[in-house]
Image (cartoon, helix red, strand yellow):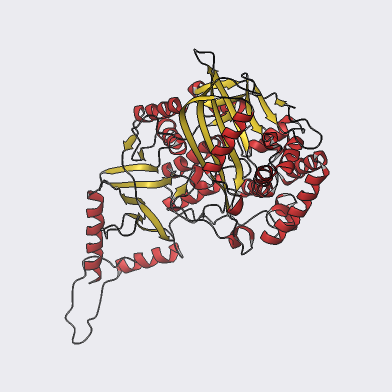
Amino acid sequence: KRFHSLNKLNSITNQINNDIDYNVDVAVLGSGIAGSTISWLLQEQYNLSIALVDPRVNEKGSWYPNYGEWRDEWHHLSNELQLPELKECTTTEWELTDCFFGGSFNISADERTTLQRPYIRVDRIKMQELLYSRFIKSGGIAIPSKLSIQRIADNLFTNYPNDKDDITNPCIHVKDGTIATLDNNQRLKCKILIDATGSESRIIARESSQHARGHPKEYPIGYQIAYGFLAHVDSLGPYDKLAMTLFDYRTDQYDGNDKRLKQVSETPTFMYTMPLGTLPNGGYRVFFEETSLVGRGDRRLTFEECKIRAFERLAYHNITVHGLEEEEFCYIPMGGELPDQNQRVVAFGGSANMVHPSTGYQACRMIASARGVANTISNGIKSQLLPDVIAKQAHRQIWNKTNRLERDFQAFGGDFLMEQYVENLRGFFIAFFAIKQPIWSGFLAGYPGLPNNHHHDSWLSRLNFALSMFFQMPWSVRIAMILFSITHTIQYGPNTLLRSLTPSNLFGDGPEDVNIQLDSVLGDNEAKQEARSMISQFTPSAVKPGVISEIIEEPLVL
């Protein structure tokens, strides 16, 4: 019976393998900027076989939304990826970046803070076409479908939505990989499955707060909400056509309207402005975006409110809008718990919580992580490591102890900014941009592999940054920071802010790394091998009374 069951199992396994439509090294779910980047890199530069799965994988111009980045970071990543064409994937570049923080602390509303740091607007269509064409040219497989599943337990999945009339298991992990049944009924087998479907993946499990911080309270997610639009306007008002405006936190448009002023002061938004050139009629083509930096609960604004504020701001500055080319509704989850490193599916990009929890920047952080993740996966596959081992190493590559501590500090910053009224936000950013540029730019980058991150990758460097900021802040912001630090530590325990700013002998250096078993052996392999050998050599020399002897043609396999 035992041998019959084993043969039946082998038959089922062989049948499964025979029904496979695609057999690849790595399958990537999601063809946005994260999925396209890691797919191209693994296919072209690491010579692995990759399937990129997305219903819109073959559609040009499907990326959303606009990406604005610092030019020094973009060029650095272009060099690191050995992809010089990336530098050409921009629509506009500005040599200067402006900010407006006037209206508080005796600073005039007209005062402009100019940062001597160039900014770019990514040409998302050109970048998508670049990565797609290079991926296909190097042998990559684009599959216009999706894997509609949701996680129901550790490494177990069911169909999504769960009322689909299909009882087959849509995604199963086997010893040498993963077998997935796509929505188009094609079956795909891969050694490693990467989820790049975004921040709200139904596939990725998150680690517990107890594991992350030794505390029962989970870290909640905040949301950056922004309404953007590419407009044709008659003038730029206070905005310089040669500069990108990163922050306009002024509220003088509501002077005389106490009720409205109170509302916008308690739930602040800022205008983000990208002048894109002149029109034949002498007007201007501009991308505007009214943004709530981060909020949750009562402080999470609606898109409609952001839209109203945007047009109120433009009207105050006598900027007449003659038409809109496009609208953008930007929704960015920020913060939350990190992916569970015990799962077989590798989270990447937004699925791996790569969004900066203080700023909302994600693209450059994701690209900076891609080389390390690709190296890890490629080395693991070529060394014939088990998929579980490769997945754990990939998770650790993205969020090792050093990276986690830096992120903890950033998450505290995001939570602090979320609670502040507009006056304190102005005071905070005045202090932020008053410190040396390499230091503030390193915080905005906030991930290994990006320029100036070394100013924030140790507890001492973070403490120096925090103290430099603190002594630049107005007193009202200092007091708010002290009080918030206390309440935040009470809420989430010392293993967030305090652990990120102190040596490891005080509060430790984070949760223990997942133990990685580098081989597939369970138990004492030497003893089991000895047993197998002795079993194969055994020949019965007696027969049990009353039992007809059977010839055993193959040894029992343990």
